[in-house]
Image 1 (cartoon, rainbow, N blue to C red):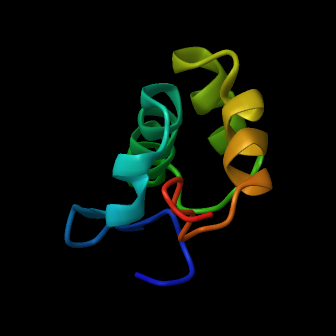
Image 2: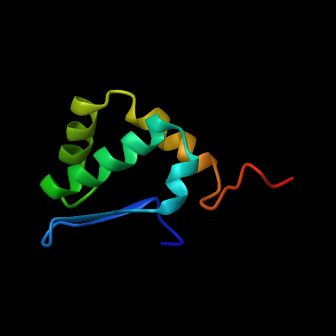
Length: 79
């Protein structure tokens, strides 16, 4: 997965997480897992989807913004 933090296939009940997530803070990993799990309930990024995330992780927007500010393949060991 080169362009996303995670993906979900609701029909198959399958969630994939980008391996680059291991380099991110645990709160961001939790956000991605919950985001993809919410897609098992609501496919689209609509009000219902956002309500689900807010119910289980009130600060989800903070963690999303933190991830969006970082490059997908960020390597903290590079100079």
